[in-house]
Image (cartoon, rainbow over all chains, first blue to last red; front, side, top):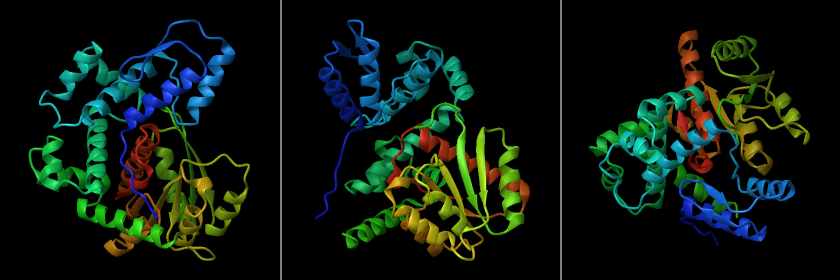
Length: 187
Length: 150
């Protein structure tokens, strides 16, 4: 038997954090966007244990301020793109600077200097990542996917999809389906 | 997980000496921090990967046509071993047939490169490939749906 699952990475991550922090009896408050406020001081030993426990889930504690800000930019973008309803009409640049309280110019500079990408490029990649998930879930037509992700047309989504993956959405779907039937046969 | 501007560990397997030089020169000219190791064919690469003590690479470049062990055979072997599940695999070939491209993705490749003959084009291609692979490793994109054909 083979099950297909649907999941929300943000919720899953919060639950993991909660469980691990509770297990180590660390008094805490989960804030938005990958921030945790720790109420008491934590011993080095306990901190190391938390770090090790979280690394198992590919969750990493970010220590320096620049990396923290870049991580926040990424989280904000991902959070915006994965909102359940249609993407808000407000531009992502506006959304980012309002949410993080820095000018967009400052944010783009720090992002480009410290990653191999620009914020614009990161946004495109994340939108296509979401499009891939929606295409695989197979509950929306491509036109509905393009509407949900705020593309002006399905043609524009297809051309951006092709630019990021080198594939058309239908070739992408075909490959995923073939891979699945292949691994089903091997069970 | 790779973090901001960490170096990427890259392995290349190609039986053609000129092609190896072609790829490694293109990579060296990019201003990225990469550690590159070259192998003379697929068998040499697989012997190296068989050692459980190695630090795993982030990205493998495999020539599709190699004697002793082809890139396609390497791909199948590597994908059947969960130890390498985080490693991205780029296959390159002179073929641009859609059937060949789809087949390598179905078998578990992440990147398909239709090899250009021109050095400046190759540099551009390699740069895009390293960029998208870096994105993939640093931004936690889904491994199962990571395909890039260029």
